Image (tube, rainbow, N blue to C red; front, side, top):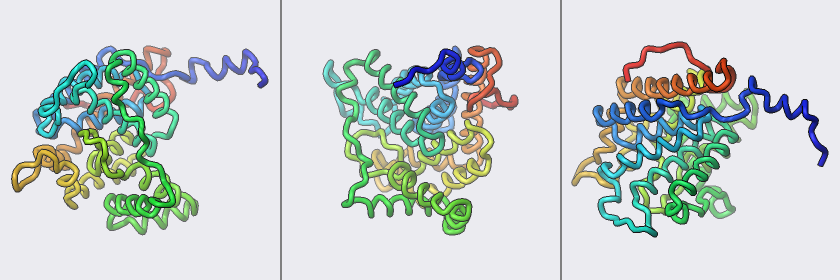
Length: 324
């Protein structure tokens, strides 16, 4: 293989191009903690704040910020109403669900971020996160999922396609057919790829087989979408679509099934009730402001790293009033 010239290598790695990840801001743990505290005060549940925080962090390309995020999430996971930690014991060879479940949850969030951010940031962040888990929590590594669950085969392709179509219609109804036609006008393969490569195999979920409370279901997928798109900036119409998508998840009752485990006798679980509050005007504003707070912290870290903060999703945003 031919070698690259020093000038070409230098240009690839030029500081102004920001070739590396965004460093973890010094105050990022405080930012995450404030978001988590707000979620608890407002009774939104533990999963939504972690979902939006992880999605924004993947989007803003800060793998090292996932480390304090996991630490914080693990300290709070045991207090989730439906956590299996209350019925599971840990040992030196069997890590507690309060660490394993949020770790797997963050990994699944990163995977779904591909549909909104592209592949490279998820690759780099998940690799860095896996490396952190191996070094900081070596007892956890053997228990992390290693079996893929999203392969398409001749036997399941029809059900994967149906799953994606169902999710598409759930989010965009009653405009789902009109939107698909509009996408096809832009390029005939655009809706084919979106539905066939994203909504089916990635954004919709196969049956959960792990028994962990780490699934990212219908309503949480909308939270991930809102967080990713808000952090990117410049895609307001898509943010709006997925805000409506979150509300439709509640209107359709998808959140009740999503959080069925731990439900009260004859009623909804506390987590499902939290999603209903989250889908309100106040709740959706909280999601956006929470992502903004993370974005502002990341922008400051990026600016300190290269002196100007230019380039990428983590560029400084116009100062917004934050009520977090």
